[in-house]
Length: 477
Image (cartoon, rainbow, N blue to C red; front, side, top):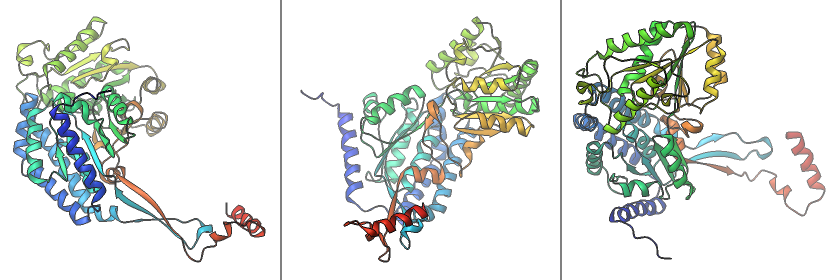
């Protein structure tokens, strides 16, 4: 049967991949010096183009708060590079592994090796951070890298391609185009590892495409991350911190608190405190430069639909203005919205919100939040607020999530010595710091036999010596 013709973009993508693949098999692994040089050049990509990246990302969003781009993207990536460069020599060294007594005086070592070619499919919501943070781990592990940016941030994608190609040879790291044909083909390439950050729905498609090649994958997805407000919590403090976690990047954050579970008697007080905190931080008009726009008209309309559905099903909507208000809609800024009395039949409770909407659900007793969370897919993040250590530990023990921040939101993600990753429908695999290095390396176990070991006694012909060896092994087992 004739094979379907490939577009020029697909053919170029195949050629690029196979060039990197062949080099990864034919050339020696990158040395420490080479890897440090690549990390230094990646640092220059970010540091030398901060203003250009900020402007490109803001233009793609309509408006992106410059402070959010600085701290959540640029400084984050620079910190990841600095940490990795500082520890890379240690990470690359062979690791001593204990040897069982019966094999002494032999020795075991675990030797990190590059996998080969790592593919990165990047999202639009934090385009710099979620593109280059995985690339740091891939470079540190000695891999060659192919990056496909998101089509929803075309200005950023074009800039990234320009500055990467200026600092990196095409044998080291390549940024592809973002057209539809490339998007369809990228995940089906036989990478040695593929990293995808995005929605659970698309993540399933990526996993299916990668599975045809048995490509190992790291999936950084999302889901509905809950915030539990315990009866012991300082309500005003919890409200302010949840408000910030929800409105950072206008809620377009995969680990944003998706909904809040609050003691039934405190729901109204909590909602009012959240609204007051939102207004203190981001004002009540769309002109506030600290408040970020929704990335596209399609996403804005989706959020309008969620609010309309909730209102039609009985929820009370708290907003500084209607989303249809021309002053807000013309800037694609969605008014900070609290959905009081959200129920499971509402669309806002059935899909990841990814916007500045906070449903609030009341609960009667401490067991209800855990039961509710455990009836649904395991979330990427979980947030718990309170002063009762026993209640906190009960929630931590009985729920499974990608990560947790206690008495705040988001900050577990910024811990460079902790892994970042999901579980179940919220993702698989992890990266950050050494976790990224290890995930993108083959940690090869090597056994060095000693000439003084009696392993030859296991060889045939069998006889009395096997009986003696059996007694020894049973004793040691």
